[in-house]
Image (cartoon, rainbow, N blue to C red; front, side, top):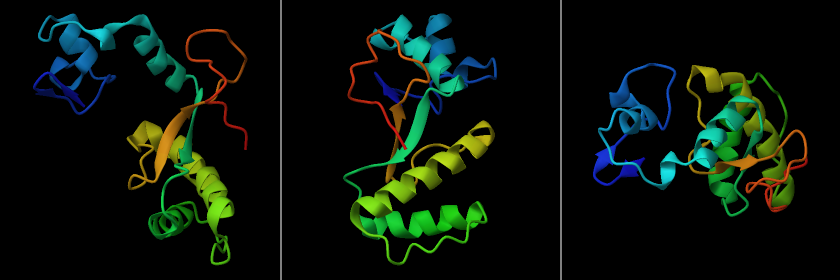
Length: 142
C-alpha cells in the first residue's frame, strides 16, 4: 500500500508494531491522517474478520492465467477436480469457489486473495444491512 511516500506491508496487523501497520502509524502520529482513517475503513477490517468478504476470480482475468493458478490451488486443497473442459464463465465460477475455499482456510496464516492477480475480495454480507457498503452491486452468490 502506498501512502504519500510511505510503504506498508499491511493496512492493519495483530502485531502492535507501527512500522508494519498503517493504522498504528497513523494513530501514533507518524503519518498524517487522511481518508483511510475513517470509520468505514476501520469497519471494513472488522467485516473481513467477521467473514463478510469472499475471494472470487476476477471476471476480466484471462483463462491462460486462471487455469495454472486454479490447478495449483486445487492441488493445495487435495481436490482432484478436472478442469480441462471448463472455459469462460464455468472456469471463472470454479476458480471463485476454489479460491474462496483456499483463502478462508489459509488467510490466518497470511494467504491473500490475489492468486496472481486473477482474484479479488468482494463484499458479501451474511445479513442484509443498509450502510454505505451495501449498494447492491457487490453481493456474491455461489
